[in-house]
Amino acid sequence: MIELSGVHKRFGDNPVLQGVNLSIASGTSMVIIGGSGTGKSVLLKCILGLIRPDRGTIMLDGRDVTAQSMSGRDRDAFLARFGMLFQGGALFDSLKVWENVAFRLLRGEAALPKAEARALAIEKLRRVGLKPEVADLFPAELSGGMQKRVGLARAIAASPDIIFFDEPTTGLDPIMAGVINDLIREIVVEMGATAMTITHDMSSVRAIADTVAMLHGGVIRWTGPVSEMDETTDPYVQQFIHGRAEGPIESVR
Amino acid sequence: MTAVLGALGRPVLMAIAALGRVALFAGAVLGHILRPPFYLRELGTAILQIGWYSLPVVGLTAIFTGGALALQIYAGGARFNAESVVPSIVAIGMTRELGPVLGGLMVAARVASSIAAEIGTMKVTEQIDALVTLSTNPLKYLAVPRVIAATLSMPVLVAVGDAIGIMGGWLVGTTRLDFNSAAYLKNTTDFLEVWDVGSGLVKGAVFGFIVALMGCYHGMNSARGAQGVGRATKSAVVSASVLILAANYVLTEVFFTT
Image: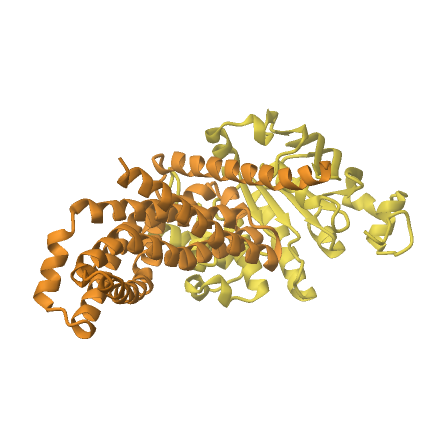
């Protein structure tokens, strides 16, 4: 269970988050929608402690995990529970594909022997639909869709119980986007993980989400099960899911 | 009036703030050096990249500098019939000053820029954030190996540069200035003291630390986009060069006065 209450974050004169309240039940898939620049990424990075919120608390299974309130060791244990797929993949380009996937497995106190880590990496690569030959290539030699898959394999390599997806389909063609969406759904269900995805791609929302939350104006505007999303009368949600230029959301941002 | 004072005060305050941030960054890096985990593979790669591949640049710089130095000292010495000082002054000049300083500046141009560009690009493409989510401290994984590698490699580069620089002086001295080869070498070894070389090596270690620290600092604080990485690279080279020259003055003052 991840619970955010009153999370605020401001960059200079720009108040990005203005009191976000949100809870994500364990084992469910939450998708956060919202326009570009509404602070979706900032929200995700606040939970991971990559960005420190100005105010508010973030609780994980009843423990305060706001970045400021954790010691180094606690933070390591906290991060070990997470996997994250970054928007651009964020693969380390100096390392081979399998070394990227096995990055966490090769380091730290519970580090695996190299051969074992490599075998596990290849198994994860197969899980996301990549052949074992890809393992010895460098990330720059892969297409965008393959990089996304490698990023996904890296995110799930250490069997995390919480996975974050930052715009998983951005920059992919519609077919590849569909493939990645299905893959995310399958993996999340099969691992029983808690998932949090941020996106503005409505096909991702319908494929991945159990619950949906819409971030607008620095607060959660609407939240509910994906099945109720189409019926809601909230004008912001309606404008967003139908992609209308007219409505309460200003089109110039 | 207040506008003038403001215009004067603002850059001063900004410079002091930047100095403070660099000092905090240096402290954080030093704090991580002795604490595990240690990334030995990254250290090996960094020594290869920073030390080994800088040898050609440092060697070429040294040989031409040594040669030019011999010509200048010969011409200057001729004004008061002291041409015979060429070997010893070339040796002292190379080992105390020009070896470490020019070597340091060349390595700053080569290494500070590449470190800043690499780490800056990693920052811009979220690779630094990815490291954190994979329970790896970016300072420990990226900065510490590079800082250790540069601090250890630079004295070796300076020693090689010293030797090649003295050889450059000897080449010019024996082929262009009618020195006898044996006499040139004897004159060099007779007047050169251990501390002439040792002080240069200590300078080298300090300059190496500065180069890697500036590369990492500016890379990690890179702004977004290609322009941000470009600016980080430029700032790394400029600040490393200026700090090397400033540190050189301070070290010379400490080593050779009183």
